Length: 284
Image (cartoon, rainbow, N blue to C red; front, side):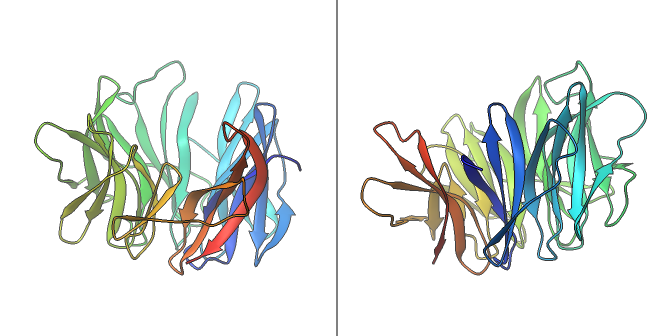
């Protein structure tokens, strides 16, 4: 594997997932205590996106016109079934400590998020449950207590960030006057995402509802239980950027951060930062 990038880390920092990019296709990798394993490839392209503290990984398979969510557990890859019909699942599955998995799905040929449903596979199950969320609800994360974090979409654009329970009761997450918001991931009491049109990263406390606007060009992509945020390759701790040191000529880009302070990401080299010397970890 020659073009591997990290994609995520579990809360303990023991498990890291990533992918080798081959043309437009993916080949999944799981590191356990730093040792890599190539995961099964049951289709043309298999992308692993997340892993929990039990080492259960999830991702997406694409094989021609067929696409579906998979779960990797105890050495085996399992296809997770969608409801009857042709569905497009997007953007990527999320998993919590129990092994519950969520993703959005919309009828094939549709786009924009307004015709989508939110699917939940409970731990160990291969059959999806449609959650009774409002029209236009998109889910991007599931916390350990089962809270769904995401956004409400109108005409293909996120109008507000939300946290829902699995019965469909929602709490709108705070946004400054004149701005819209979307929540993209969550961990413990914290959720992160973005604010528009300012393009700021946002950090919400799910317990108190408080919003912190982070000064960075782009939304938050990852968060840990201490409220550290990764946004556009930058690690933000208490709102301040943390340097990720690398040898001369290389730039460190963060992708995800564990509760133990293990940051996973990659190094970039070259004038435009296009070369990929491979995945990296930092301990903070």
